[in-house]
Amino acid sequence: MSTTSGAAGRSPLFYTVAEAARILRVDPATVYRAIRENAFPAVRLRTRYVVPARAVEELAEQAAASGEVVDVARAAAERRTAREVARLNGGASW
Image (cartoon, rainbow, N blue to C red; front, top):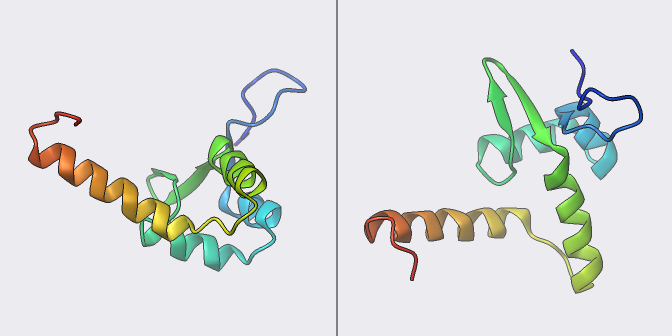
């Protein structure tokens, strides 16, 4: 299974969990745990997870731009809260 977008030399659209962990320099178990806790974006394909390359890139960009610690769990909680508010408001975004 290829994680590339098809054309030679193009960046992958998705990483395996092991690849994302290697890029982030953490143990794959850490990434799996964050995915299961909805604290890290992933796509589940049957029993496998793949991580959008853009998500990894955006984490790096946020950390570099802010000069601060990027808390993925907090960001995920904020996204969940925003989705819940939108759901309760009938999908309207205020």
